[in-house]
Length: 279
Image 1 (cartoon, rainbow, N blue to C red):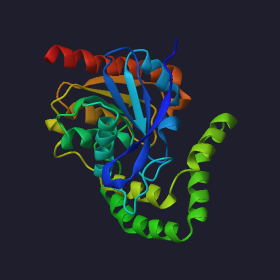
Image 2 (cartoon, helix red, strand yellow):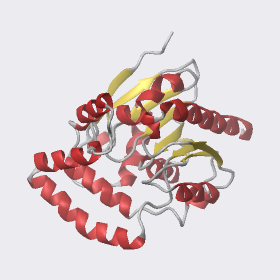
Image 3 (cartoon, rainbow, N blue to C red):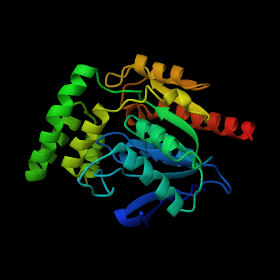
Image 4 (cartoon, helix red, strand yellow):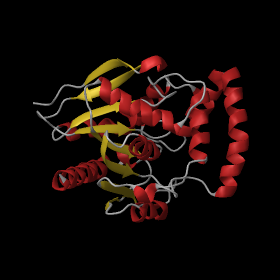
């Protein structure tokens, strides 16, 4: 019998409340915290993964700030999203979890380990990298994106429509297009632009090599947004990281769920085994 999917509203201190999806899994199961990518939501990014993962793990997920049902914020910071994940887990009675991040969720997962080492017992990093933009592109983005975010505050409906059009441009499947459209209705366009700005300046080169918890890296080998070579370099930078390859593009979590879900399950089980063996 499949575990029930329950969404809970939790209070994150003075920052306000957010919704956490919590699927109990088997009794005593290791907890996973699923952290979605830029412009997505937890349901959109991880939809095909919830049920299969819950057969083995307790599964939690939340929308990041400014995304879907996530906290509203005037300034998006990846570090705050990492803090939110830990606070949300604690609000659900979870004191330790494996952080599972996809694309932008990868930096958030890594930062959750860096900022809360007692709470993060392992990492699963999917379709992600140590940095996301070349230096020249990042410099241009850091100049232009704050201005774009300010304009989005003044004309949110226009910004909303433009971002949605870009997200749907390469999506042909009508059911997926409708799902994206429905999930995107809760987004704050200015925060999504700020998230892009935050991601453009992110780099873990100086500290990712100090990760000391079991880690798996899922590489999407046909990825055009996060080149596979950057994903492999991320894995090479983390001591003992195990690599799992998925023959798919950046949207493999949904478009190639038949390949991605088994790889994700294997990656999480690998981290769990290594945590147990280290005790």
